Image (cartoon, rainbow, N blue to C red; front, side, top):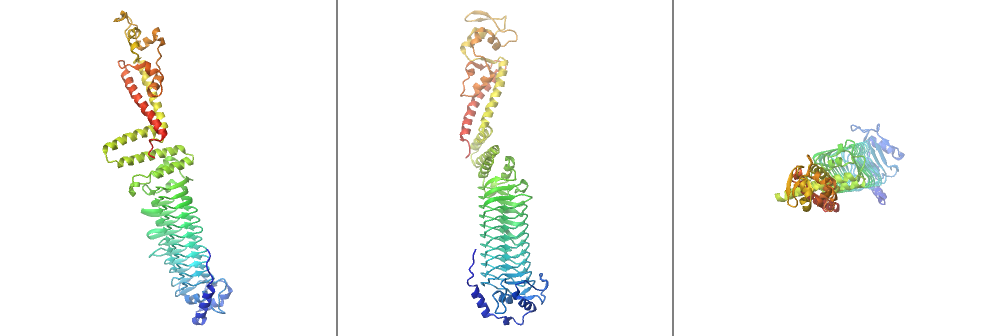
Length: 576
């Protein structure tokens, strides 16, 4: 950022022509000392140079006198090129530099100000107020070639830097700023390189809405209690570096809505107290780097990431928001790093959303996003598990919206079948598993029926043949047959009709019964193994009634599962 300094000399000449050193005589002792050292360029230390606790006459300096020097003084009483640098002064009156142009540094470190300095619309080089105590700072629309430094300062009142432009940093490391009537630090639309609030205490909060930072906003270890709702307002901030809230303790909302962060958002170890309301709102934020939420970080309130875009997420389960305190709808992210990367953990993460609290019934996008990230990271099975849960919840929400109880019941049955057999279309191979299950079940039932002799030929000709009919009569008994008259039974003691029939040479050309092939032939309608054409359960024999009932059931199930498998692989049964 470049500033226009072309009028600096004019301002100095004007100041020199209207105000004289004689106007301040008799000079105060501290002022005499400053004049004596004025051209040395050394730091003018009044007393021991530390912050005065009371107005010691040897340290009192009038603000108007300092203004006279800052604006150039007069011949024989001009400040050094390094600027006006004073340590340990008690500054009386108001230091009013509004609209002034000062091309030297202003250094008033460890000074006590009786009134808040005024630098509205001023153009300066650098401003040093390190370790000073002052009742505020009014510097709206200030332009500085360098930065503003309040490291370790004690400010009882607000610092107003709305629309200011700084070529350097705003450094308030270790400062204590209190403002009960508004924000402790107000910097809306501020243009600056870095905003450094490390270890600072800002009672009243920070407002940097619309600010543009060439580098970082670093509030690591800061304490920011808000007197109202918002503690840190960085709405639509443009940060070309990172926002660091590491180990900060914030009471109130942290608002990053619509912000653009080229680096990271680091909330490692951060504690945000705003129970019952929003703790961290990064809705629609674009975070190109990483979002850190770990190392005992705690958000007592809602974490809103609606519509946010995040490079990677570095988190841990212990730092996740409480159930009902997470908003992830339309949030997009690239990967999980150093955090849980399994379906169960991340489904628990998503379950902390409560759409009903926000007037919605279900948000499918967070599940689709999680599944996409799992697939990209190579966790295909976890992705499928997420999508199955997504389908289940989405269908539950659809049923809840259905007004007709009959239609709701039909949907419940249909969804249950699709869930069990196909995983709602997300696991179509489940249909094959069920086919294998019913096939093996049929093998067992038909093998038992065979052992009980409850299987008979599926041919009217064979059933009327003497070799089959006589095998149903015990050996030694006679029965009259229409074709051949009285005939003797062929079944030996303990022998079933089926076993007897198999021993006849007439049955040698008849296909043998196989429970394995018979079950497969019954189950799959597209196959024709020949078994079903030649054999059939005999309901008149023990075990035959169960076998014939399963025969019909398996035929229907086979058709249904085959169709469901085709629909599952084609994606016809998915919700989206």
